[in-house]
Amino acid sequence: MNATPIQTTPSLFLRAAWGEDTPRAPLWLMRQAGRYLPEYRAIKERASFWEMVRTPELAAEVTLQPLRRFPLDAAILFSDIMTPLPAMGVAVAFNPGPVVAEPLRSPAQIEALRLPEAAEVAPFVAEAIRLVRRELQGRETVLIGFGGAPLTLATYLVQGAGSKDYEVFRAFLRQEPALAHRLLEKLTELTLRYLRMQVEAGAQAIQLFDSWAGLHDPQTYRTFGLPYNRRVLEGLGGLGVPRIYLAVGASHLYPLIAELPCEVVSVDWRMSLDQVRGFFPNHTLQGNLDPAVLLAPPAVIAQETRKVLRAGRGGPHIFNLGHGVIRTTPPEHVAHLVEVVQQFNRWQEES
Ligand code: CP3
Image (cartoon, rainbow, N blue to C red; front, top):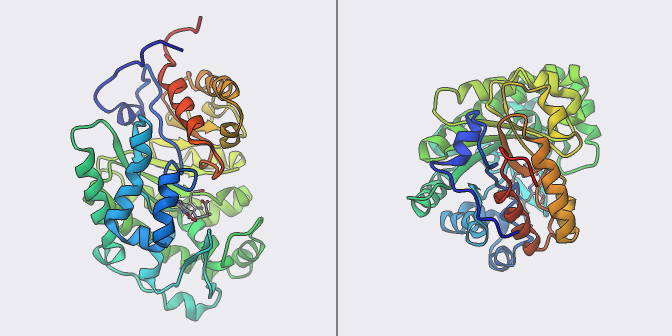
């Protein structure tokens, strides 16, 4: 592999996100900042996860770490989907995933949730965004802001912690639908305020993480997921930033997801991009290498990555993993992946 990377300006990421079929696929990786990087672990030894998130200089530093190693086309703000929730009055811990010591299940708890003004939700996030943008000045690298979708935030708030199947939450939706809607209403308003604040602070694209949408059957998603996602995404329309929606294990929901007002759909590895394209003729697709492939030797990584790139040729494509980088991934494997993506010309048949 000694071909020179294909050079393109301006921001390849934004061009692809707005629907342009670019000669090379822009790339970034979910969880590109995180525990697989020794420099992340070094900071984590001195600071708790919340301290990292709430200290703008640390959050900015961790956001930039992967960019110093790899020529990625986008940075994602270092934070968490749970970040805006303490401002509502909910205590959230990380161990390492989110833990809500007092899960929300009663009307009194849900009524007590506060709806803070945008400036009060997470001012440290606005500051971290400004710091990162300053560092990226003059570069093509785009900063992606993000939030959790209302249904996915509710999943943690009601279940209380990560779980394989989130049975408590799935039962709650059926047992207490009115209460569930009340919670989702509040989360929708909070999320919208929080994401608009991120755009005002300088986020150049927004990704809405609906990581647990795939737990539900289409009817349940249509009732408890779709309308709230639509409101958040519609509320971000007209701000000049592309909107990315991610759901995991959700191919049974694609006909519904296709109704959402967003420019980019992020897909997991369970279906190939050429098949997924049929559901989303008017969207940019983002994805979808299985993150486990990065645990395999470089030759396998190259082969599997090119498969994804070929399958993505039928329309605009942003390369990513199907979900986050796994903690045990060797950073050199990520470097190899980035090189393979950068050298792949989407417009030229391979020799
Ligand atoms: O690099 C990036 O992608 C940006 C940072 C980021 C984090 N969380 C940092 C983090 C992002 C975008 C998130 C979003 C997030 N958080 C999601 C949606 C994405 C997805 O994975 O589906 C979800 C479901 C969460 C909830 C969450 N937070 C989980 C399940 C965990 C467990 C550990 C893990 O790494 O998956 C966390 C903690 C967390 N968030 C860590 C990081 C780097 C690990 C904390 C540690 O260092 O111990």
